[in-house]
Length: 322
Ligand code: SF4
Image 1 (cartoon, rainbow, N blue to C red):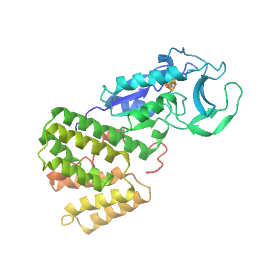
Image 2 (spheres, protein in one colour):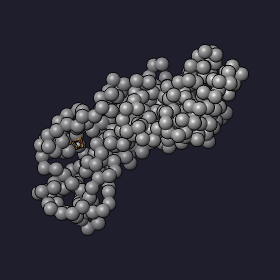
Image 3 (tube, protein in one colour):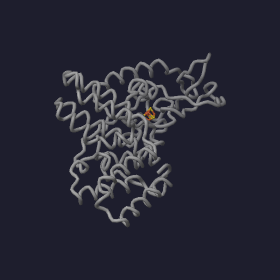
Image 4 (tube, helix red, strand yellow):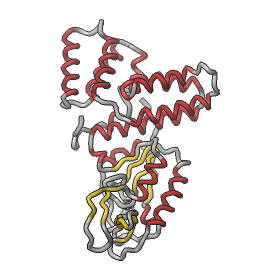
């Protein structure tokens, strides 16, 4: 299966430049592994506002109930510079057809959440609350329909799988939209039926109604309505129960062809998945193989079997939440 390359913005210090406050770069197996399959866009907001590397670290402080971004020793205030930069950068990125963001966690600039707050600059205690970074916050608000992830969270298998599914589905949708034909949208919808069913059955139905286009709207209007609903559908990851229902539904296509032992083998694997002992892809690989063997053409193109390149499946890290 051919995949369109998603456009991803990544914090520059993750594998793209020695721009951290201490002059270092962060090595990331995740970012390196993804590189051949995506187009990366990157920048370092702190260097873009004129700071050197190495430099004095920045921190978020709370002053008169207001969060400020300041240099940790001198207290120099960089709040307005960073907000202005973030807004201008977000404007620029709106034209880049992005499919997702990977931002450096815990950074007072790039962090999406989990950023420490202090009472002041210098030797001051932290506040027992976390916030978002000044750049990450603007990005999260302006691109709320896209996945904006913290690189640390992506070491979790299920968060990463959801992220990959979103970015590759978004990239494929963009390419379908560029063609602008209704027939292409119908095919996109049909190929994603079971994937979307696992995500949200109600929204799948709404998408079906949009594609059916009984009101005979122009293709452009239909695409716009579909896009809005699609990004909403992709926001919440499917839970195990919904995924289980979908694979049982697909299993129904082969119920007359499979032997009792084959069915029992599949159901045993399904139980292992429910018990977090094997990944979901074990089930979909088996179903895909049966779709090929029994020549169920409709199933062969279903994206639920390959929502993203197989090479990206790695269960070698934390593996939490399989
Ligand atoms: S976290 Fe963001 S601002 Fe900080 S070094 Fe990395 S890219 Fe630059």
